[in-house]
Image 1: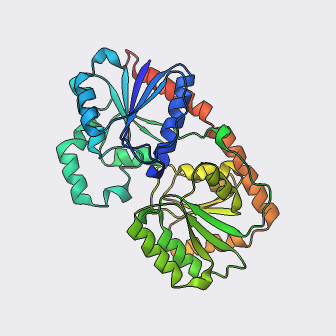
Image 2: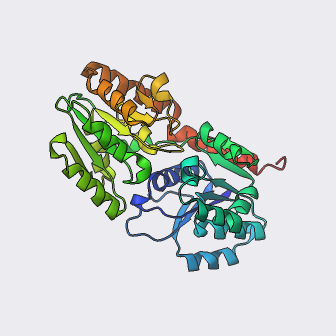
Image 3: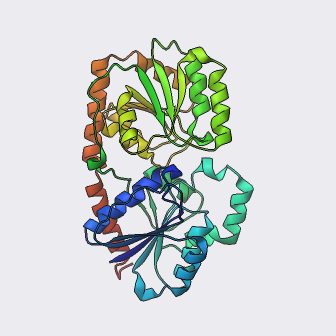
Length: 362
């Protein structure tokens, strides 16, 4: 089986898909699927190890158009489009239709209500020009959670929709948390309005911190980062700090430094950093804008509505949770990741999805 993955960027700053797509493709290659990832060149792409059956190509949009023109039906069995809206992705959707090559789409949260309501006129125009047709003509939509599937169906798409979450390569987890008592609440993600950082700071300002600190890691638009920095500096006694981006080993070290992880996001179709935090044994606070109800049902964190008062209450409860309980919650999360989100089982499910989609019955 030959599968072409198209993603706009594999840059380290690109968020979850820059990590989850290569991780899944590596596992597919190990299972014998011939995989090629194509994306734009960037300054700091993630490192994708050399694996048999896996190839990565960085093509600018001109070279991508050239590839699309040359592509033949017999060259590839399936095209897997990661994300939407970007013309880079649309080029290959259009080429696939012209060449009669089946393709599926993983929207990566780009059809969630919060996203659709952001710059709505631009999105309506994109839908009219190309995006609606690209989605309708796909042989399937792959979502990473049930809620994302329901949201896509609610806006009218009737494509076959398959739910398979992201997975985590546990071999990349370089350490797990052993000592609880650092009294540190940590955030790690893109620095973006969607992530709810301003609400986090508002909730934090109202708390009795009891010696706890808040460290916010990540990178984003420099103007927005500077705005948050000024907001924090206005209240320097509040023990909140912007600590910059964390990648590779530094990321895992940062995650294990926290007693509790917080992601007060408006919307996530999955939230890779949630399973990364759970995988090192750190309980998580996140919102109902994510699919992480399992934090509640598996007693490994807090799953709350995104309101300042409710976020304050959850953080307050976490601060007042004794270290033994935090450790047990961390172990519960680690067990959940091993049972449900390991990359080996997720890779097999993706391979089965491909096989079923390419079956003559479909």
